[in-house]
Amino acid sequence: MQSTCHVCEKLFKVRFRYQVREEAGEYIYVCSTGCQQSLVLGVDGVSACDTCGRTFQVEYPYQVSVSDGRREYFCSTDCRERGHRRQSEFGLVRPTPKRIAVFNHKGGTGKTTTAINLAAGMAEAGRRVLLIDADGQGNVGASLGIAGQRTLYHVLVNGAKVSDVAVPVRDGLDVLTSNESLAAAELFLAERPNRDRIMRERLGDACRAYDTVVIDCAPALSLMNQNAMVYADSVIVPVACDYLSLVGVKQVLRTIHNVRELLQHDVQLLGVLPTFFDVRNRISREAIVTLRKHFEERCYDPIRINTKLREAPSAKQTIFEYAPKSHGAEDYMRLVQKVTAVAMRGQIARPEMAVPAA
Image (tube, rainbow, N blue to C red; front, side, top):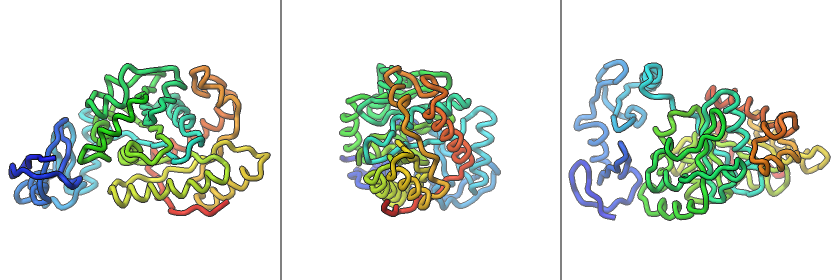
């Protein structure tokens, strides 16, 4: 693909991720790192801090922020945080929401059930939550009895506004649905030079109206999941209490590591959630021991096998609506409290890269 450099106007072929960025809904191209530096830093690289006013030499990426098409400069991380906090207090911009991906390569671990009830529980706790279905099967919409006229496909491919596409389903809870058209979105992503960052670019500032974004990921190694992981700042991994699911955790941690190292996005492991726990089964008990030994406080209390959890989607309800006194509701409310206490304080641990065999 031939593009024109925004700085020197040279025609060139986009080959690297740094050569394209999106600002104010438009793509900007640079042919070299030198032009990239001139674009972001100016000719001499000297800028005035938007918080304290001090002039300084721009050296690091965190010192430049782009919001609504306007660049802001900060001489330190402290000034950056104070500047964003001041803007939030004056209503100019809301803080970036906490973005949690519910992810596991293996199917049948309770990802959709976890994403729905985590999002619903946080909404009940008073947070403004957006639940994104990033799985083309569309199970989130089916479980809640909704089918949006437009979906995540229209946001990613057509650039539709999240506020126009998201469906309000409960007080404080909006849902961005998906369907089989998401497969076509993957083809669109594959042709873009910044193909693993489209979701982050499309949803970045558009989701500032929310306190929390929860993403239900597909059980696959896919470009869509790469986008979800690059957009998210933390990951919850549901793990069914069986041997094969324990083996699969290694692959998830390897993916998190690759996103951090290869895609240069600091996504963190928020926690591992044991699901389908049956205290009567030896493998369930051994799975909990293994996970707690390896992940310690990052291993959440298990979600017990509960018939009500299976029945709730047929009633188009969350577990808190369908059976608020059930073990399922109790277990997921405990998860909501844990995630709120840990994630909202920013106490997110880095992932380990191996899990002992059960």
